[in-house]
Amino acid sequence: MIYVKDAGSLRYIKLNKAGEELLGFTKEELLEKDVYDIFPKDEAEFFTKTSSEVLHNKKTVDIPEETVLTKTAGERILHTRKIPIMDTKGNPLYLLGISEDITEQRKLEEKLKEYHNHLEDLVEEKTEEIRKTNNSLLTINEELSSFSYSVSHDLRSPLRGIDGWSLALDEDYGDKLDDTAKEYIRTIRAEVQRMAKLIDALLMLSKVSKTEIKREKVDLSSFAEKIAADLVKQDGNRKADFIIEPDLTADGDSSLLLILIQNLIENAWKFTGKCERARIEFGRTSIDEKPVFFVRDNGAGFDMAFVNNLFTPFYRLHHALDFPGTGIGLATVRRIINMHNGTVRAEGEPGKGAAFYFSL
Image (cartoon, rainbow, N blue to C red; front, side, top):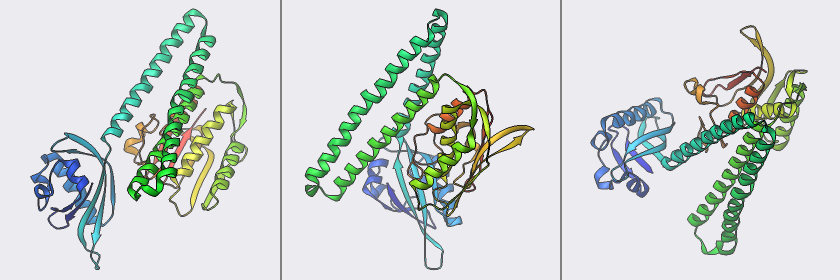
């Protein structure tokens, strides 16, 4: 949905066809009206407040979620970007709004969370049964192997089919399709690849959960140095400084701690992607007189009001268009740290970076 409002009255003066279809209103019903004429008072107040802030501050604002009561489809959840349009003297003339309906996406995320929680409950129940029957390792390995096979084969096979047939459609009939149809095909293939990455992340989470810890002395600094070198090699155009404290070791499972460090440093690398020069640190410090490791960056950061949700599977604080990802990485980090009887905490500020502190 794309719309334009007058900066002074905040009344609608433009609305595209997608906006009419989404809201269930015709242009004639909307144009020259303000939000109080159309939406419930609380929604209208929220829309007016955010629009006024955009025009007053003369800065684009990204709203991850806003609820709107449509005329024909009930409540819908939108991801909206509001942009001030200025005259030559820098004064706001119009407000441009671009909204995407993410209602179905949110429903799917909730369903995935339910499935994930259900799986965890099933694993706990099975584990208890296994303890009672003294047959734990055999049963767990059989069930997890079956689950891994199911995810890797039964889900990936149709995904490959969708991707392959989409590619065939583009290659064989591309000259008969207009630009819009080609863009649809590209979107289908991108979503398929995103789902494949999500499956890989879920498999990683499953693998971490079933790993039996083998403790040894682990050189975390060497892990960090290799991961940093690989990231720079993959993207040679990025300007980035890695500050890695040498000779930091820990007692733990080598394979799991590698996954832990990799997730944290790759997370920092991703969220510094828009920095002119990234700065990523790995080191050790003290909090409450106890030693902790940390990974710190100068990237996008986050609002501390949402810090409790940060390690929840599938929960994302940034839009996927800005920072792609699966929402599984930090959940994996927390699971590994819990398996090592440690703690993890995060600190951040929007636009000023983030830091993750953990003990083992």
